[in-house]
Amino acid sequence: MAEEMTSMTDVTFDTGSNTKSENVPVQVTSIRLNKDNYLSWSAALEIGITSRGRLPYITGEKPAPSKTDPGWATWALEDSQVKVWIISSVSADIQPLILRKLTSYDMWTVLARMYGRKKRVLRTYQIKRNIYSFKQGDLSVASFYAALKTKWEELDYHVNDVWNCGSDHELYRQKEWMDRTFIFVGGLRDEFESIRSHILNCDETPGIDGVYTRVESEEQRRQGLGNVLFGSAVIVTSWDTVDFCWDLHPEKRLTRGRPPSGRRGPPMPDTNSPSVEKAKLSSDQIKELQAYISRLSTTKEEASTSEGA
Image (cartoon, rainbow, N blue to C red; front, side, top):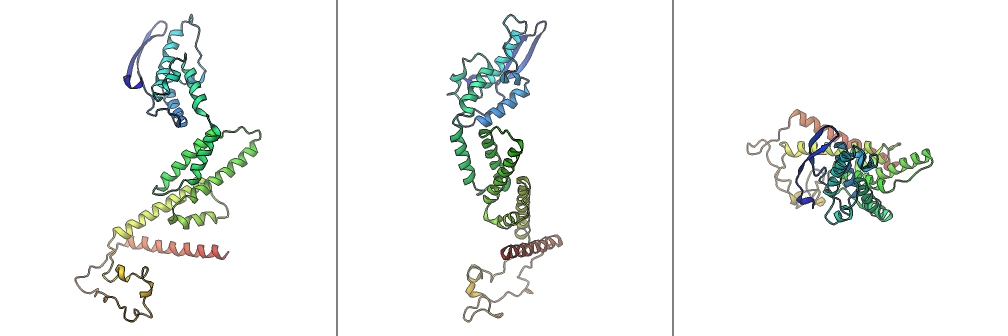
């Protein structure tokens, strides 16, 4: 039904003494309601309806007047506009459930009752299970944090409990956000182990937004450093190959300045030879590299101190 509707409809209605004409869009959101996305659908549709000045129709603040009332025709037309927006934003299998409802408020209420908090305990369990198993993987820090926040918002919707004591509620919220901080840092990739250890060893753990800012800054720093190291004129000499890599073959490490007997690698290239290209770093690249080495040393010292404690 929604697919057959045009994108814009010309509407004319009588306001008593004047006739008003306006173009009304058939859709105010691209999100279609199904059995699992009520939270995002209702938020998007409510924004669209509000932007058109029709929010009171779905909240019940603008009930139907008497049919003998001079304003009834205008109300009926505007309420029908909202009904069209709702019908065109739900999936085809849901449309028959609301088509015969008398008002847009009735439609909105039925959908909220059917899909809003239906199976609340089961949905809460599913969301929490998904949150605790969620890891960063290949996502950027920003995308990982945004995905977690979306899941937390949905969880808050389904566990919107009523508290009689405001102070107890505040303490609970503080504990809840501390747990979410642990979930966030715990789900990061292993490359963020250093910043994770630093955050968790602080005397006072910052809030979740502060933690995110620190981790995201670390990611940006690493990306910038990668551009310096791999985008500059840093070269690998011919003797530093896979066969003679000390990290892969520790037995080939130099012994008192000489390779182990019988395991000499290729001779060092003559750096004065015109055939060998010398690496050239700008002063800014050198300064950034020195700053990175200094930060590495600081991180190692902090890690050693925390292990000793």
